[in-house]
Image (tube, rainbow, N blue to C red; front, side):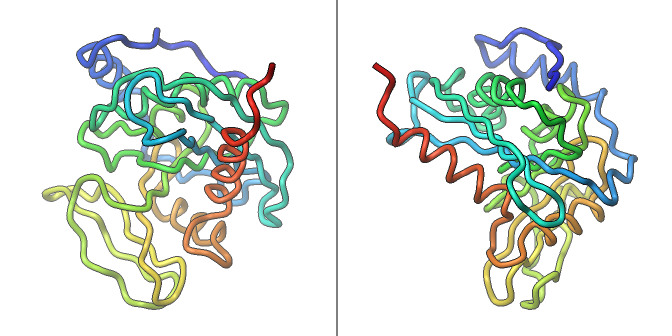
Length: 232
């Protein structure tokens, strides 16, 4: 599939922040998004060891699922090293080069991207889901295990319960209970999808477990790639 080359990969924090500032106006945040997508791609990255430094070995995985059966349609995985230091708010730049390469290897063009991370629930309102959405033009959102910025109250204990995540007066995401009595996840839009649609799909992608099948399948693929013997 096609991923646009809108910028070079940055070498410094200032360059990375400038890229986020330049691309942020390209976000489309008033599109309802795909109501009945046929396919959805989950993206995740695993690291060897503690994942620190710019030499950390990683595997970036993309798993395309049929929607709503959640059967695997196609998989792509790329191994490499982290492309950028660990800097809060710029974490996407560690993973983007490998994820972009994995996406380009796909023969299937998914209708939706679901990232293990953040969209606009980000200090600069431009997390990984936003960045990938702009580069691909595909509706995208993030489902995170923990909050990054903002404040929230715990939703009710029943599956499907939600509550807003606020940063000041701005709603930047939603806390979503995907399993009864289990801690929630954090949903934020990336590009070309609204929060209601993203949360509805997040719940549909999580029929049995706390985390969506998009994240679970991509996580397993990336971990298996790291565990495989290096080619001789």
